[in-house]
Each structure stands twice: as structure tokens, then as C-alpha cells.
Picture 1 (tube, rainbow, N blue to C red):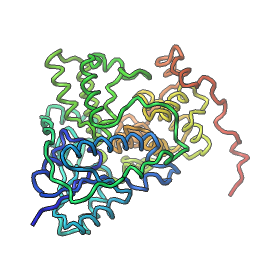
Picture 2: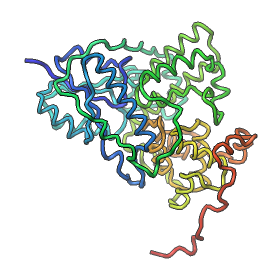
Picture 3: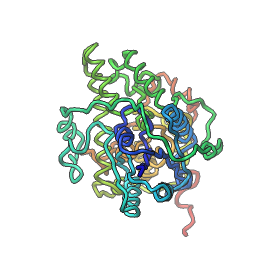
Picture 4: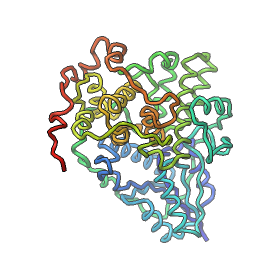
Length: 442
């Protein structure tokens, strides 16, 4: 009897360094390659936002189109379902008498709840996961999943000398699919969410080919030699690696970046900046396992520390922050860039997050949810972990971070070019159009 498997693509949209897909190719006779575009991603959540803006959906769509083309070259194709993954995969598994379901290990609480639900509903099917999205496998980190160092520094000391496994080779064979190709592009219409549509050409081209191109060009350019000095600049393509959108979608793996970095160091020498790029990969790694360990607490108002913070929710302030209409020109410029491109520099993210939490006194989770909606490089661990960190309810031993906006403007936007570029030089003077004392009591 022929063995039929399902490979569930998530944020691992690539054929190079995909050991889980490689394993599936060797174990079954027929393989269904599926990606589930959950309709809930486009419905308002508890914060009144959607999970994916038009920019994010567009980037994902292009990644899926390229992956489908790559699969066609191997006699395969991608099935994209506009359905909750539990229902879609369960129905396919029953209909085609699937023996094994494969997936890259996920760190998100809801993604893992879906995996658990499927396992409970399909007890006769074998479920297989492995680490393809991290620098280290879980079995290299003996404390997990029960314990994790409470600070990044302790984590870094514990793991930075561990061996990183070499990337898996390019997949050159896949078993055929038992399904016919479907026209799944109809799910991706142009006006999924008109309220967040911007007529600005993105700097990022989606897909594995574009990610590999950026990987090659970045190290060939030598920009990594100035990475530490330039990474806090607000504008400019070469001031950081720009790998994060491809990492978030799984077009690139952190191991590919690590080994390209080591190859560069062998040829041109290591320095503080090349180490700092590895340092940032370790930060990403820390927040991956942080999300894996803390589960639902990643989204809790009190964070992992269980601390109350003196914040509230001011709808008008949040709208002004989201649209770049605050009294702070630098914050406005950053938010306009984020809305238009789906990207924002590391320093820009810290500045606008500090403003929301401190100057505007808004619940940090609204900022995290807005970043989830807008960022091309949205990663559940890095995003929510960093927001907890800045709000003082996460892994930062120093407590809440507060960036002096005037000082940040003088340091990172002395000439005003960045603010003028995003037409943010004439800010709104007031946060609130109505005095709080005049609000009706309900």
C-alpha cells in the first residue's frame, strides 16, 4: 500500500536547508504540500486590528508563488487552503489515508495548540516535527522546555560556543502529489484590507531566491564590517543586513546566515561588527525559546514577570500613534515608514515603542499587535518578547526602558532629512482633542 504524507508549510517557505521536507521526501510515496491561509488573519482581533496588513499579505503571496514554482520543477505543487488548518488538514488526512504529517517546529502558542488538536483528532497518524527555524536544536539546550535563563546575557554565555549544524542540502526530489493543482491565487485579491493599503513600492522582493540574493550581496558588499556602527541608523539599505523579512517567512534560515558569516570571517577576518551580527542572531534565538517556554504569557498584560504597569488605553492617542500624527516628528516619521513599507529600523522600533508606553501611557500590547499587523518581518517571539522587554514586564533586568525623544532626534536625525522624507516635520500639537474631565461617565 502506498504511503501518503502531508507536509504542512508554515514559516519555512524554502527548499534549501529544510531538513523536515527532506525527511518527508524519503519516507512516503505520495506527498501533499499544503499552506493554510487562515481567514482569521484578516478579521479584527481583540485589539481591533488584523494580523496581516496588505503589505504582509503581498509579501507572503509572492513567497508562496515562488515556492509553488520551485515545487513544480520537482513534479510537485503547493496547495493553499483558505481555511482553518485544523479543519483543512484533518479532512485531507482522512480522505487520502495519510500516514504521517510533517511540520517544522513552531514556537507560537496558537500554532502549537493547532498541532496538539490535530494529534488528538487523528490518533492513528504519525506526527513529526524538527527544528529548521533556529540556530540550535532543542536537544542541544538541555534546560528546555522547562527552564530558560531569565536574561539574554546568561543565555548568550550558555549557548554561544555550541556547534551549529550545517544547513541541509537543496531538495532535488519530492514524491508526487495525489491532488490536482488548484487556483489558490484567488484568495489573494488586491483589496483585502483597503484601510492599510499604501502606494509605496516595497524595497523587499519576497521568496527564497530574493533572500539568497540578499545573503550573497550583503556579504559581498562588506557592509558587515560596519554592522555594529551603522545598525542604529534610521535610513539606508546597507545600515543593517535586512535579512529579517526572509527569516520571518522562512525563505532563509538562521543557519544559512551563520555559515555565510563564518565563511566571510575566514576570508576577511572577524571583528566586533561580524560578532555583533551573530549577537543579533542569538537575540532572535533567545526570543524563540522564550516564546516556546512562556506560551500564553507572551501576550499577557503583566508579562512573564507578573507586573502591573501604569498604562491604560486612549483610543485617540493610539490612532495618532498608528498614523504618525503625534506631537513628536521623529515618531511620526518612523510610523509613516512602517505603514508604507512594512519595515522599520531597530532604533526606530525602540523609539516608537518607548513613545507608546511612556509618553502616551498606552497598554504595550496594542503596540505589539500593531507591529504584528504591519511588519514584514513579524516573528511572534521577537515581536512580543521585545515589547515585553521595553515595557518592563519581560526579560530586561533593568525594568521599563524610556528613550528621550529629543535626545534621539538630535542623535539620529540631526539634519532632519529622515523626518522631511516622511513629511513628518509638522506634528499635531495635542494628544487629546477632548479633556478627560469632559468625558461622559458611562
